[in-house]
Length: 328
Figure (cartoon, rainbow, N blue to C red):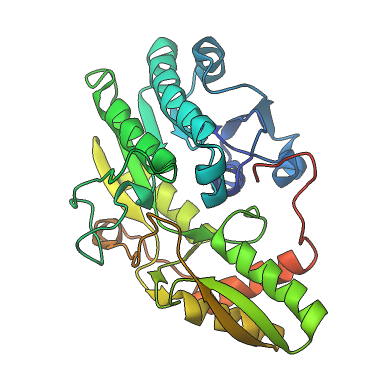
């Protein structure tokens, strides 16, 4: 039976893939996105199958109107991108915090009983235990550091989700995605920046390319391909518990040096690394424990080598962000 499902941030990277999947499952999908960071081009081919509300999630009245009759609201709208955390922290916080309050209030006004909220691995900052499970305390190490604008906004988002109208909802769930990647993910995350710099370096220097990398390069992440994440989100919504939190990601940890060298191998170049200081607040290791999701039947299927190949092929033809959107 078809459901009415609303996706805020549905023209964003993860949101657009989620919208595509939900449409494929014969749902009536409404996308809420004011396109300050999302890109309509990600969902252009779906316009005859979805409803697009070009609205700001901070407008509670508009959200209540968009949510009317919805069975589920997926709230993914945010200003993401590491570069944005440092350069636009006030916008990151405003969209994150006021947006969360607006969405939860609008759900109550519209009678929506099921809400899925996107959080982030940034809520842990530098966790004491890696791999990290969902019980590790959340942390805001330094309110003076603009990097924490995003992680801090997501901590508040989780509090709002679980405490606003606790008795009103049948199901409120939070997922914490860990380092999601794929083609057309934007230009302000580490993988597209690595790929574009390697491509430009190859054009300029040939097969041996000087390549700046923050820190020692032994810093680690666990990258998860976007299709796996979308499958995880839907699995969590269908099988997960009310008032619960789930990590969605991949538990294969890899160093940034290894990632850069994987990109170099695909481009048939050699990178000569030049090390610079890391940004204050950058975490040395990140890897999620995904045991809770595995118990629901979730298993990431795309390995990093195959996912990077798809990503590299896309950025070969799309090295520069659109001139009219400085946040992507």
